[in-house]
Image (cartoon, rainbow, N blue to C red):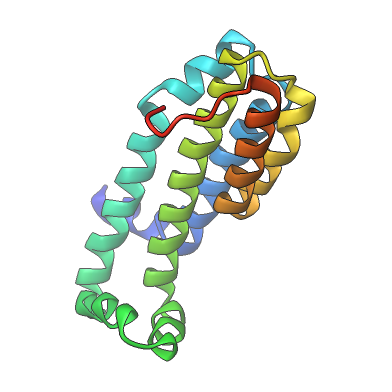
Length: 157
């Protein structure tokens, strides 16, 4: 049973299923953010828990494959090291899972915050799309929208 589980959960399958799970949530955040089911799904711990399990399993498999987990520490010394680490499938999946998890959290926060300040979902759609592709750019755009529409930007929100 466990062997079949490990055979199925390849890094490629984890990547595929992560995207299958996440993409519909982004569609919901962009097009129907105020519907109850969207709020339940995006505010639940289920999605982060699934992503954390995938992340943990990837670490476990990486250790089993004898890929050096210490290689991650090399990231902080040279840009060439980042390229080398990203050439490793398991480390690339670590970073993808991290990216997806942080961006879905950020997208959920933006959608909830926009709802709190009654900012139109049509206006928030572009920042959400940008967050999906590059989190910080979308966040800055949302902050600009929020300043203009809500007339408020606090340091402790």
